[in-house]
Length: 368
Image (cartoon, rainbow, N blue to C red; front, side, top):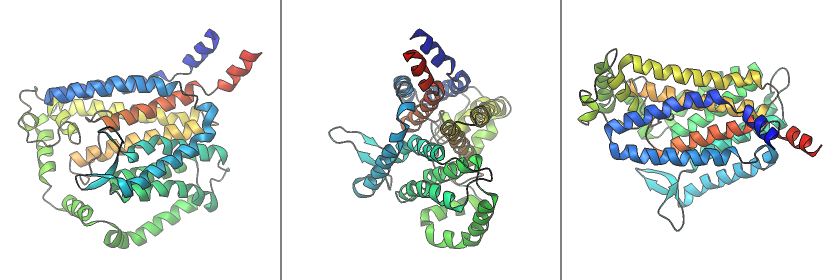
């Protein structure tokens, strides 16, 4: 048993943890300076995430990959339930009440790891040919990508829905799809863009786009740009970071935490954060090279890389006025339990898939 344990531990991806820990430490540092009570709550999320990480890490996922479709359809059922019995907050119906206790869950967050696993499961059972997937296979995978997209977009949560859509097709792009299909999609999107904007986008979403392309940025973005500009090269002390301390900077602990980071630690601090993200993303994408025959790991790792990249990019561009304000958090840095814990669970699943990928060999040798 010790022999098996050592080999499992040897497959654990330690660089992944090295990249995650600085992001968590930075999150607590920034949130505690703005709001001590939220920082204490964030510590609770950190503690819970440790137990969840260990619990998920030791799940027998490798032995039970065939039950992934079951959990996928459970996730779809929860998204459908939101449409009929969902709880509405701030004008959006995205949550489900847990019976008997005063807690809600957000199925659009819960389905992210299941979605990544499902894509990996489907690709594992239908590996790509040398020239990439043809139209029939592409449509087959698209069915599993579009179902959660449509249900989440109806809540409405177009930001999360688009992220899942891009992640799903991004994974297929990395795994391999015939280039003619991508070319056709680009032509169709360019042709239908006016129709999509006129008929499929809601009024408040159109307003966000108009605010974005207008010469005058919204109040939130204005205050964010002021905070970023005042940070300079190396930033200010916490007492001098007036944009956040005097409450001019909105939602400084979550959506606009990057602006506070720059106000506090300047251009240097923001550059260090972005470099950490880039190293994390490149490390995840490199698994396509090191585990070329393991499609579950490749799809899951690529999906995480795309999730981190899209969330990080949209959040930073939003904060500096280069993208509409859509409310996507900065991964592992923004305050909040749902997004943070979800990312920790996703990383735990990846560590599980890596550490136990030779489980059948371990069991065979143990029987011998």
